[in-house]
Length: 268
Length: 268
Image (tube, rainbow over the protein chains, first blue to last red):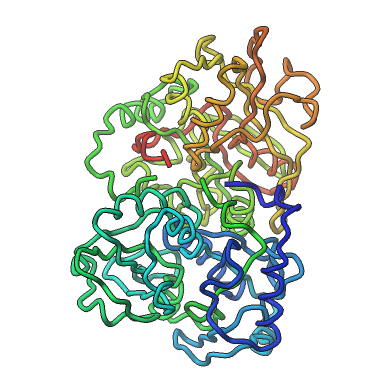
């Protein structure tokens, strides 16, 4: 993993252009956009809840690997100087009392409701997909141009203060002969969820029907393929719901924040 | 890295016995004690400062890799069920208004001053020394039975809230032919400081005299050896001083908390 301070010379033009389109109102998913640049999950909470969430992330690092945390009241991040977290994601979710209140392409108005919001940017498994694809492992939701399927499991996260909730996982069907490679390659990216948390046996983690993900879209599973599950950065949204958090802003699943940081920076 | 929840079957008798000796009053350094069990740096802060420190750790992960954070008011840790953080380290430092007030073998009285203390346990480079030694790399301070030398550098940590300070590094002299191996092997342990932050050229990071470390003891450097510097978990103590933190309890340098977690659990 390379320190952010040492990445000053990277030309992040593709990432900047993508963010500009989203700022202008484009609300499309980010899969495949600005390839090579790390995409991040986001959750924004009032200062009063930020300590609990920071602790929740520390205690559940596979689901919530923190890439950056803003100062209270700031909408900037080191991961993309010049970006505005209020406008530069394609689609936001506004949460009130643990319930999804609104999906919206610009969070400026909601952001202005609270003076002390803290933004958390969390690693996304999209980052290791490029390495897996380069090793000849098919990423089904990319082939099929759909959103990755995500499931709420029966595995409780380690609680922190007022925050609790179950783990959310993303799933990729992988040929049985390449499952070990997928585990090894993703394991080299611990800052973006790392190795799978579960391989095969979906019922063991409370997933009854792979064709009905709680988030994203279902994908084809071909004979000889094993469902492989990775901890997912949507886990904080499940915690917002389970804990009745009074106010939060998040990305909409699949609609990530595109940073200026190359994926390779998160290679262990 | 292996999830703590999956380590239930490890027999940690050696770690438990060591902690019992320290609880009974033994105040000796922990280097070489309970080999194979991870040792941790500790800093304990009032809840009011805990958010700032959690953010400081997130922003300076090479210096402050968090292994566990307690709930406010608790003196327990998942890393060693049954341990008492107030008594089970050999030697503590009590800090008041950014100054070292006392070194003491039992922190129970100081701990009772505040009802809401949060304990942070931070990875220690002792964890990867075993792997380096097994690869035939001499660890000089182990050979010479001294404490590892630690230096305050001129490199500013990324500040967080009211916390700021410069990076502290530990130094091991390594034969030039083995420096790359030392970097590779320690790099496999990102949760315990990982790869070196600086190799050779001590003056570049503000170290004028290797024979005068700010913490620990100096070590012999033989011809053909290069000083190799790793981020150090004493960095929080430098931040306590630089930031004038009103109250903190830490371990005394070299007098670590011995956990029940095997070193191998932190191998990437």
